[in-house]
Image 1 (cartoon, rainbow, N blue to C red):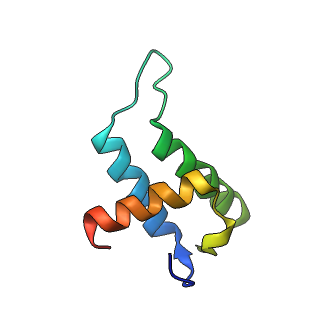
Image 2: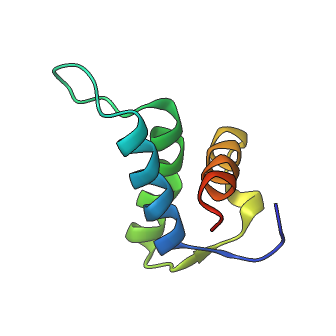
Length: 75
């Protein structure tokens, strides 16, 4: 992963990518593991009014999901 800051728009796009690949499941509409991992920092960014986040602030699962989205989409 690069040292460049990740934007909230990129996190949202990555979440939507994973939701399209693996739609919510069950009566509770549970997110897939990748979307769930990315949703946590995304929600914190919204609450804090942040528009960018450093890659090292993501959990390992979120980093892996984000990098897989980036590799799949060329983003």
